[in-house]
Image 1 (tube, rainbow, N blue to C red):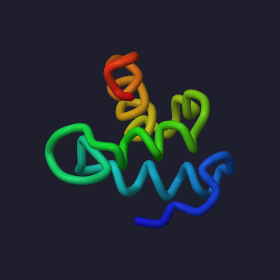
Image 2 (image 1 turned 60 degrees about the vertical axis):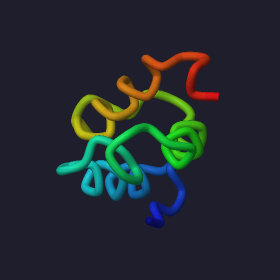
Image 3 (image 1 turned 30 degrees about the vertical axis):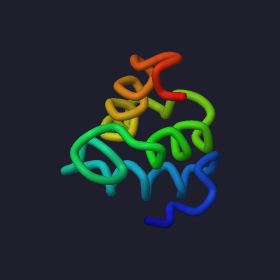
Length: 67
């Protein structure tokens, strides 16, 4: 699971493709991998990367629980 620079368009595109058929980075429940990638992304992906945006908003909804 290497996405490169998640602040770059190429890295976000890789993340978007990876999440096309997945809800989480690893497994079937939120994990520390999701937290690490969420923090690396930093801000909401653009709307055209809808898989990454869906995942980002879902992980964001956990708020302080994600820590």
